[in-house]
Length: 313
Figure 1 (cartoon, rainbow, N blue to C red):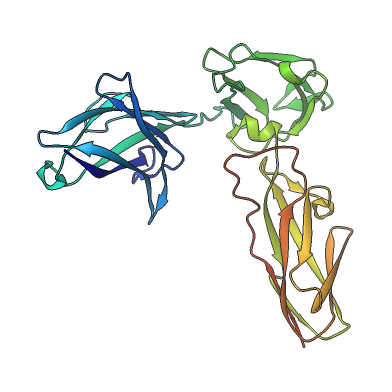
Figure 2 (figure 1 turned 180 degrees about the horizontal axis):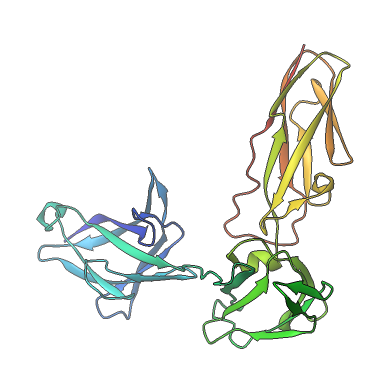
């Protein structure tokens, strides 16, 4: 018996070609499932999502039970069978004694496929809600109040009035809303703070992103500027939130634009534009960071953008 390196590869079977599924918690118990031996979270390594563990192996192998968890994902098939989490793995020492010649195991996760509205005028908003202890928030009341005026859609009158919805036992909710419609949504746990939303012009959308949007992407036009000392150049930033809205006025309440080297150039943000002024010869760039941190993302990839290149001569 000796310590061996064990790799658990977690993949998403929902994609046409199974892709890496990172952020999966892998907990290893003895064969009976009573004693915790080790745990690790899968992370990207060379394009694969891998949880690295060190476990005792032997020949014949030592059997372990693994339990897998990631919100919104179900698991099956660590050894090519139909078992769901928990499931068993066999660790050999030396690894060459294993049927595959390694102590590597692939686990397929089934991610949630978001349902789409059948009516092309509607967007099916759906998603999961959890409590602070990680359990599904079942029977969470959601009250939706349309803010638009009475509207005629395909000859039919669309009226206001409250819409009551509630999560099921899995903390899941699903409701169709008119695309581009403005609504005020009140959650049971946030009675004193309603959320004003605009429904995306899409067949389906994630309701948590609709309720709690953050800036996800910024694009500059032009993508780079060249100017002389004392010259001012105008740049337009397009700021997109995670609810797919394009924010106005350069989203100055949500993001901050900064110059990496202010001895080369400075900026002023006004009326939805960025004005870059050359200070001295050199190169620098304009960066973006999220200013509004009232909503926490885990994991948080930050704002997706290509820095604005600035050359002063």
